[in-house]
Length: 221
Ligand code: SAH
Image 1: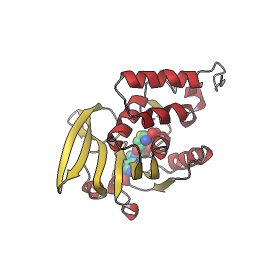
Image 2: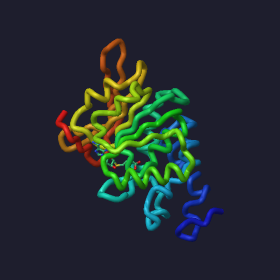
Image 3: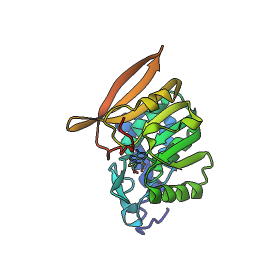
Image 4: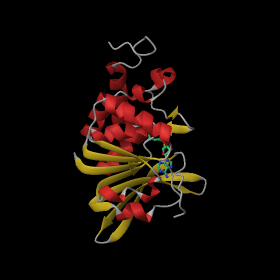
């Protein structure tokens, strides 16, 4: 057993297996997503004091008033962006935060690009991603609401902060058949949307109600 930071094995593989069982019960089916969440230690992405809670199905605070999403939401968004494809060539994430979602993507995507606007978060995420040995991730400090045009188009785009609307720049950076998963604020609530483009027409599917920190854009959309 892996004796974790708490000294009682709360970060062990067994604990992670329980989380995977719960994710299955909540309807997560994609084996690649379940495997990634089993193998990638979420407790390394939060403060040591929170490590023992890393495998509860709950969002956890990270620095600068940001949050690491609940495991179910990470799984749901990853499954939605894959859309039945076991692997993607290129994906873009907006809101690197702790880097946890970035690494989950990196387990199934050949090249992951991720943009974060808060420098200390980006630096810490970069260190963690390197320590875990993922070399297929490129990070950038910037306003991600404009995407990352240099490496577009992307087979999948995941936004992990709530936008006021779907930024045109992100839709424009989708490859044919690409999928954009984004939380959008609607009145007092937020909903997770899946955007696809078919025959030049943008299609929107509502996935579920969510609760994300806001996407802070430098430029108004
Ligand atoms: N995916 C992250 C979630 C972090 S919370 C994780 O797994 O930990 C959302 C993140 O989005 C925060 O770190 C916040 O700083 C970042 N963010 C908000 N607006 C942004 C913007 N316009 N561009 C890039 N990052 C942004």
